[in-house]
Length: 307
Image (cartoon, rainbow, N blue to C red; front, side, top):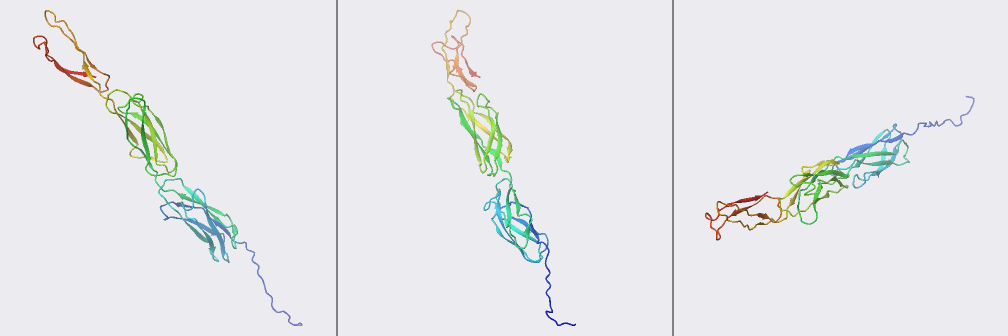
């Protein structure tokens, strides 16, 4: 009214003053399992819904867990469509049957997401080991005693399966028919397995002698395992085989005066060539020479035993 119309339309621009959403990533935990049956699921969230698409790149990074042996290396882009606030990153886990410590790796987000900011760039994924402890056992062993200088009885201590951890077990000798300090050198100690080792050896000194005796034995007993359990064979018997020949037996001549009346006793000494660890016996009997049993002497038959 009272004027002419120039530009009759105006454009109104509504400026968005909302802050971009914030991306957060959550730590995760997963059982190791076997093969690639299990996957770690890592949650990625937006603080609020967005009216535009939000993208952020990600990649895995080794920690104590290693790609290709503990998990499958993974990378990609997490995308949120308008209105979405939750997404999942899936990382396959590579399981095994080796007892080991729990391991971890990381998921790292790119520092320049599209249409959002980062609350935290990295999440930790913990892989819980679910394999049983290996058992530890020890084998029986035999050794020849020997005559000159000590001999080692070498025992083998075994793990039932490789372990990813160091394993230790205590051992100690114990008498049976063999006596510590006389037949063998007593010993205690620790057997240590490095990761993935399954056998170790323990030498025990066996002492020699020249005495014929029965085979003897002693025990080696395992105890107090660390990162392992005791197996069914937690003690070993060490058998010491005697290698000494038996002694020889001999009898000495004897002389006695006959006398004129009554009877006179005479004694013959019977000898072993050396000591024996066994009871030794020999039969003894008289036999006529120029003297006749019954008129010159009294016949004798019997057994002599050496303890």
